[in-house]
Length: 399
Image (cartoon, rainbow, N blue to C red; front, top):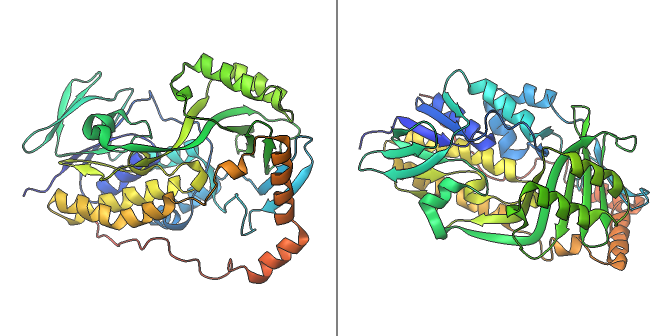
């Protein structure tokens, strides 16, 4: 079988650009198509750790990533009066803040400038239809007509339209009973280098995080049955969110004003993607399109970067793309399955609805952050020991 050489990557975010970098390094002719008119530089904090950090270092991007961190020093759990219930610096074993915290858009920008001169990138377009031929894949774009490739790799988001064309009803979504909204807001005097988490009645959680651009990143989560809110027009989404939060206290009035004027709102249901297989013929998928773990796991970047590295590496080592796709799945599937597991009761227990429930969860946070708990954590912590390897990264030879 003739080795594939010309590859289309659909999606120009973290998974797609990482994939393009490694494919180019292994000698493939790479085209990336991104439906946005330019790089999507918005988004919230992501952390780069474990296998993803090892891969970033292989790409010689470690110093740039470290220089672009959000400066977050840890997380404080506060009540609706803004009194600190508990705080966990980033060096605490149970802190949400990781050593490397970077905005999604900043990481996309770093990846793009690493690879832009070595690949072809189409902005402002997307795949309209896709058809596998005997020895190639024909794609029809919305704007650019038709083009054929040896392989097409889908690196789109959780709502991937290309995945739907190829895999259809095979893809299942495990909805976690939670909606999330993300937006950038003006920095206020109450904002600092500490992230702040506040539980409010109605199963609502606010998460306010610092960035390195002089603004603040706001996340709003609330529990709800799956009601299709993510499909509403932006104006309706804003109205819904305002109705949800306007009377729950804390800094809700501030957030309502920001919602009314924001232009970068991202509103989505929190779901995991469950796919029985990640390839079909000459088409494969990676990242959120294939195995979105949800932001709750804190592993989305790990899976996106690791999956891209392994998929590209296996294609570089195998002449037969079927063997490469199979090896990619065999290596990544156990890691994905482990990552998508979640503790019993999550997220319900962490997002209480009643005033009493909010008081209980704050008491739990307070206990976890107490001096005694810190003493026990330090006494038995394995943080200083060599961390357990989450997945053994293969070593691939360059072209």
